[in-house]
Length: 145
Image 1: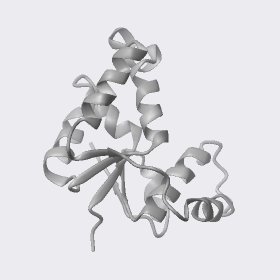
Image 2: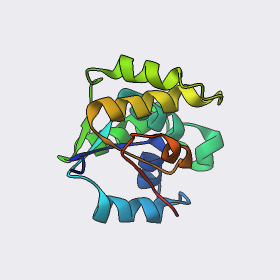
Image 3: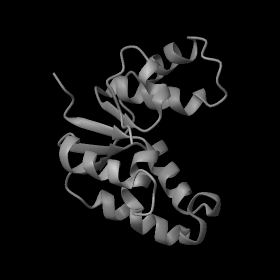
Image 4: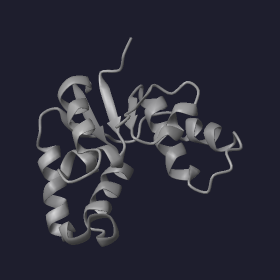
């Protein structure tokens, strides 16, 4: 049975929020036609989204101030279909299992956390990051541009 909640990676939230983003069109199609009834931030994706919005290297001249980034995040959280989830039960055990699997990437920590969050919460992970597709047992939708 498909999950009724999608955990969106920060890259999806950013593409949804920024019309000039390379993947905005694909993210918009996902949002309008493929999203679960509930879409979610966790604290990590929420903070990453805010950080990206206020990062000049990512946003260039469209960089937002921290208050502006917070307001953009609030616009999503004010939608009835969007929520900020607390850590689910079983997260630490799932995270430990993933971390002990021997993945060598230095970027593995946050990805492992997000995968464990989605797994232990019974959520579908939605991302542009193809690395998530290789994780067994994870319900994941990798958006392709």
